[in-house]
Image (cartoon, rainbow, N blue to C red):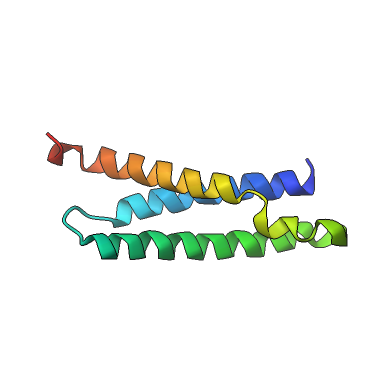
Length: 98
């Protein structure tokens, strides 16, 4: 598998993990400002982790592709984080919606 593909899928997987963790941490009745802080902090920590991992994966990559290590896979990271956070939160707290 290509180095950039591994970075892409690593970021996607970390987005899923971050979304599950954020969905588990958020409890009903929490202030919207606190919820946004939890989401942004979780996303920031996991994105930094993914950046560190991508730098370790891409040590042998050419200099012209080094910039892509920081941005490759950012959209799947964000969307999978949001999707799994909403999914986990909804599954855990569905009795409140009834």
